[in-house]
Amino acid sequence: MSREVKILYVAGAEDGIRLDRWFRRRWPQLSHIQVQKLARSGQIRVDGARVKPEARLTAGAAIRVPPLPEAPPVGEHSAPELSDRDAAYARSLVLHEDELVIALNKPVGLAVQGGTKTTKHVDRLLSAWGEGLARPRLVHRLDRDTSGVLLLGKGPEAAKRLAGTFARRQAKKTYWAIVSGNPKPPQGIIDQPLRKTGVNDYEMMRFADAGDPRAESAETAYATVSRAAHRAAWMALRPFTGRTHQLRAHMAGIGHPILGDPKYGTPETAELSGPLKLQLHARRIELDHPGGGRLIVEAPISPEMKAGFDRFGFTLDEAEGDPLAERPRR
Image (cartoon, rainbow, N blue to C red; front, top):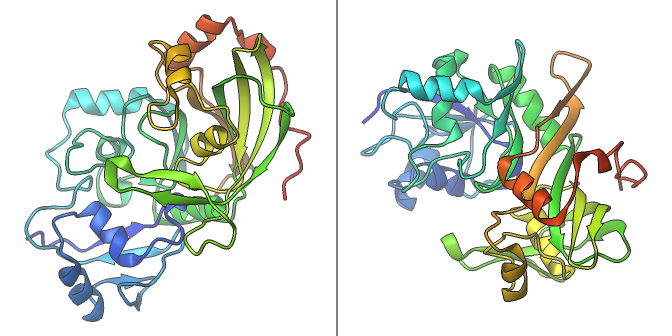
């Protein structure tokens, strides 16, 4: 049993998750009964207060994590000491760093957080900056196969402010994607609730009726940047909510799946994609810096997305300005 008491922070993408689920995602060795006992005895606290295991968490909330039994927490400080090679790799991903914020260029295939079969992930690599208060904190997430900008907070206060910005939907995020066909109209807003179906690796998000008790509101602005005849389109996407697989599910739901997506694609899009990996890239984030002013970070196009550009003849100079600038935010 680890004797260390830790304070962890709820990421923006985890806003609304139940406390017991938050624990089980990170420490799958814990039983439901163990989490209940820890919460009801006051060993687990949220923002300093006792909470019930079924309580819903808000982004930026501080979770007191007591010493946990048996296996150490996945993705936290219990991992083997980071090698010099891994530390150098972590630092090679930095796009921006100051006294409060780090922005990484997350590559395709690198998970943000660990799991039972995932030992190399961003959360573990953060030990490159030190432990304890020196260790940066995750404030939002990207899918394993999505590349691009990932922000971290240096210190608990910066992390809380950044996570709160994401939770309040004040971060302006721009993704690039290559999709099947040409969406019509060429720009607009997808305001369509989503609900989860399936479990674990088979979990997917589907369109849902607003009255469905399992539905979560989801809103995405989109704009066409360029077209490859009628075969494919390069899109700029801006999510106003942070649902699991939101962009992938929304584009598939309107009949234009993102290419290279084995989960939301079709046999036709698989043939069109060929060897391409998921054509989704977190290109840019703009938000208030926790120390004041505005922070704008862009990630260069990934090798996987470059392969898609080459396949369909897109060039970076076609993306002058912000194609989503005229889209109103609701």
